[in-house]
Image (cartoon, rainbow, N blue to C red; front, side, top):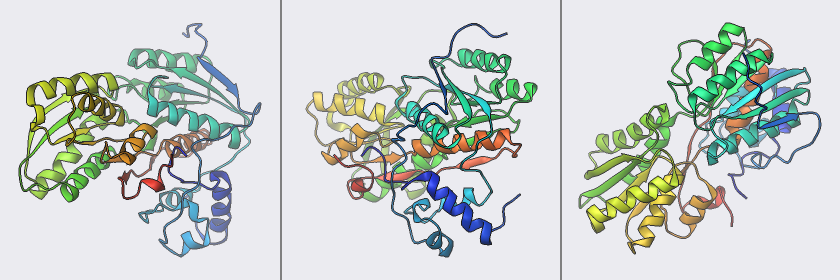
Length: 379
């Protein structure tokens, strides 16, 4: 099982929750000729939604108890209950045409988000025609794809941006054409209103910092190396700020030996860590990475060097990272809910096409260590 057991059946859960709310809760109210890399008529096929699996609920409140408990997080946040209470449609049969402009078809986490988006759309919005585009980690290409989408007359532009600044004009392109815009996973720096389905990236770094503070003794100064994400992303800045804000506020006894950008790539995590090992050797106590790909690269370099005591932390809760935790090779990762981001991105797109005002749909991060690994992963 690849993800945390989050949903029994997301669609059914939402229908049940919607029924409950109807009884007692108030709702708040140009183009080039390049073919999209993938296109699907949502009504053509049923799809197995890999990422929509079961999760046990918390005992947060009476509403969560009465409605479907699969909507609750084990932290008691009930974030899906909160979003459902705002009157979103979990299903719909209106005919619409959407485009999903993916950051890159080679980015592991973003592809999970896209796949969840596509699966949920097919299952729950069967009259939506969806085209998927590969942005190839190129902001200018994603902008061109947005312009193409406008020329093709789509009803909604959905994007996972490759650059928070470089892709900001996608919002402008959509706004000028009178088309709603939804961003998933990564925000863009644009003051115009747009939907965002994703997580507070500061919290992911904060959770890493809390793990270090609470589980790694600092009687002796802990020497830390940090693998940064790609410059230009909000989440790159926020994840780094989160981890070190926690350590600094706690007065944690550490020295930052080096902080370098691995751009979220495994191979760069390997090469940077190899250089660190050459320079610092067994002085390194902790390597924290802004995602699991870089963390796994660091692990590969550490194992090749025969070092055993370096504690490595990542973010994303990818399968291989969780397997490494089970083997005692990684100590910590952060579950970023790809399924939730993709599914709520689709729900936001449908709502946007029906005129709902844009807002942030916040999906919380969750800590994963050996203590709770079985809640998120099984061999």
